[in-house]
Image 1 (tube, rainbow, N blue to C red):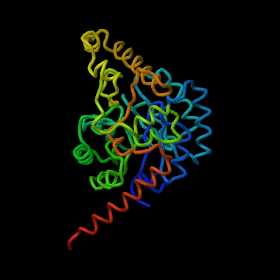
Image 2: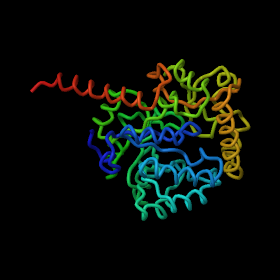
Image 3: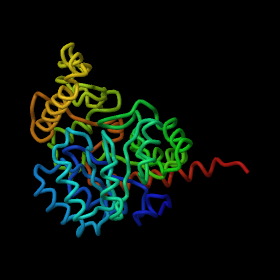
Image 4: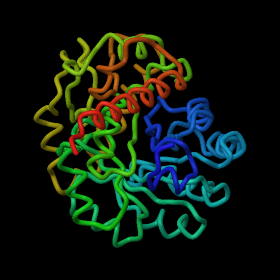
Length: 329
């Protein structure tokens, strides 16, 4: 057992969060995380209707003994946010991760129920804001993250946030090995959110083509695009992505900067981008937009959640042993 804020807060063995991944994360993966000594999180939007969401949350509270998290998009693109909050008030999870907006309402409504509120942040300014609102911890989304990534490397972002706030910091991005886990703990992180390596698992519900792409491609094949949601998002550089490019065209760029229409333009960009990601996630199509981070470099086969976790922990033990062997008194 590795003792950190995460392990003590959620009474788990390893300081790992199975990161919430749009369309990828599912109940099976969260249950496997629980069985293997860590904790998983899933986007509320991975369920198509509030009724499906409520049924799944009720089941997860039983299957995971309440040890799971929900990721909420807290801006206006999430038209189900109000209903999802009502459901979470009825069936509180262990924690909620907020993304892409202000966590104020989530904190006000769920924190009194004992739900820990973890907020995605990419810089000090926003970290201080969510701290003032009452967040319990920070998810430091760094430049190695899959999906929506930040601009700053973990080696800089984690110490920055620790210095600027008094909140626990959890690293998100760039960790796919046990040595990587050891490195972010050494930076002062209380744990790590790991996503991309778990795409290529038997439990994930995406297509075999998506899973195999995680195995076949590597770090050099990851590019950042703003065509998916209007914000930087890391994807695999498939032939289709190369064809459409990673930058918004002149019209898209103009609309996203125009004060009168940028809110609606960004919502349209987000909707179109997410539909493209959804279509590619579950079926073979030439329009392959597969979201992933550079840690797919360490995926060499489609495995189980348990097997990947076992490897990471074994690598962590070996890396720690090697580090201690180098110590000179």
